[in-house]
Image (cartoon, rainbow, N blue to C red):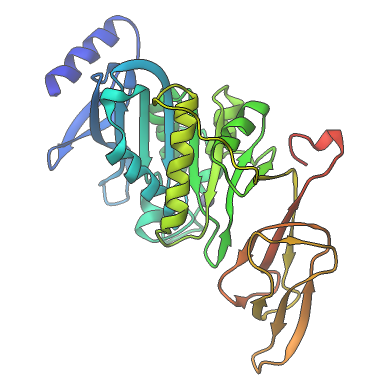
Length: 357
Ligand SMILES: [Zn+2]
């Protein structure tokens, strides 16, 4: 393996290309500072620790990477998860793909990253929680980062420039809702191309959304690599149903890309496509009870939750301010003032909103 990589690095260097850079090993798994899937052996699976930076203790932040390079040429698909360190279902989706895809029957290359945010995962934190002494930043708002910048920017910059961007022709970034809340299966898309990718996932809701600056999805799409964010339910757990749906969706995308054999699964009629959303929030702190299931259609004025005080007295009836679909709701009944009760999505027919409002 070392000989293969060294030969590939020489070849790439002579051609003026970046090459995979190995810099050591941990229990027999190579540590790399750069990945170039083009120099990986065809028809084989490789596992690496990608070095995304260095902690204050001088130890490397290591990110696991699985590269499955097919026996035949084809697109380079990047699947990432765990950029928010308490959002775990996507990690299980990737583990299933890593075990289940046969490189002998694959066209193209799948790069799987089951856990982008090592410090956040260690602390079950949505944020990049590397340093207790100051506020922790959101790693999914600082892409493409900056190598040589402050710690989180350097970490993001290494992920972006040495792992994600050079190896992606299309990408799916896997998430869940934040702690204390849940999503239906929910895909964000921003263009016609990424909407098609989202449809292949067969989610409950597709949200056309211009997105936020610094996310993996939007930074890739803006750089010419179509990418979607796929939200799979709740944080801090492995939910078998969501994991199975996530895996099925990605395999469907791979069939459409001719990376896997077989026909694209006919799409169920059900994805609710939205371009607008509104969060309904707790008017005061207290205990909340949901009156309608996550995923329900609601009408304007419909009661969606009731809130009580510490003594059980009803303080507020929460109603839907407009008609739509409940894409997200609380799961932890303790709601702070302003905490999210439900999020309602709907379609705004204004042509200016077609790609998200
Ligand atoms: Zn997330």
